[in-house]
Image (cartoon, rainbow, N blue to C red; front, side, top):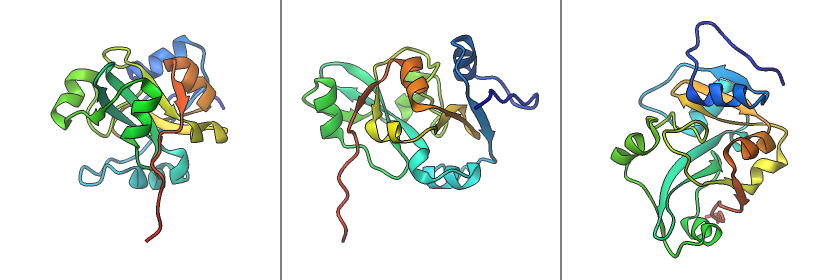
Length: 169
């Protein structure tokens, strides 16, 4: 995979950090639908399977404080599994109003890379089954496609099973 740069795209902290570390990545730009910031919509627009488009969720543990959880768009974060992986008794999603002050990123553009502060990062183990995955590049409408091992190295992520078991109705 080669680094892709378009002169019409704004560089982000995430892309600067990856470039500084010599990590190969590709940027995929898409038109943002403010009414639908879902992973399903993003996956369709960047032409990747939903399982390979990962969302970054901002959480808070009762012992460790703020953490980032990176889970596939096809899955739902298990707060119980994240608590166990992070050494917390309880974990909760932070309120939407707190996401930007904590990370520097807007909802729909939260990247695990290059945020305002370096929080502990937990990456769902399913990421390692793919040659590449997509995460936000730190801006709505811009996804960064890279090898999961490179993402793990870039953010010092702990890999764990973080997704809730799905039950069929």
